[in-house]
Image (cartoon, rainbow, N blue to C red; front, side, top):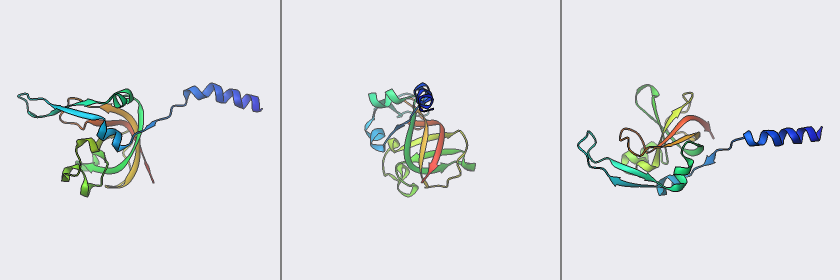
Length: 144
C-alpha cells in the first residue's frame, strides 16, 4: 500500500504547479521607464522596461497580497494596491508600480479596501497607456 502511494505521488508530482509569491518590492524595483513622445492621445506615456526576474515570470502563475480597489460602475474594474484607497497612488502615495490590474475568473465577493491575496497569470504591459503596467489574468482572490 505504501509503495503504491509513493508511486502515485512520484508520478503526479511533476503536474503539481506552485505559484511564485511576488512582493510589492519586486514590482517597485523591477520596472523602469523611458518617455515615449508621440502625437497620440497619450503624448507623454512612459514605456516600461521590466527586470529579468519579472520578465521570466510573465505568463506564469503568481500570488500577490494587497488591498482590493474597485473602479468603475458595477464593480467592473479591479485593482490590487500596495496601499488602501485613502493612501493609494491616486492620492500621490506611490506610483503606477504600486497597483496591479486584475481580471478575475469569477467576480470576487470582497469589498473595497479588503486585504486579500490574489493568484493569477502575470502579464507585463510595456506599451498600452490605457492599462496598468502589471496585470493579473484568470485571477482568484483569497481573504484572510
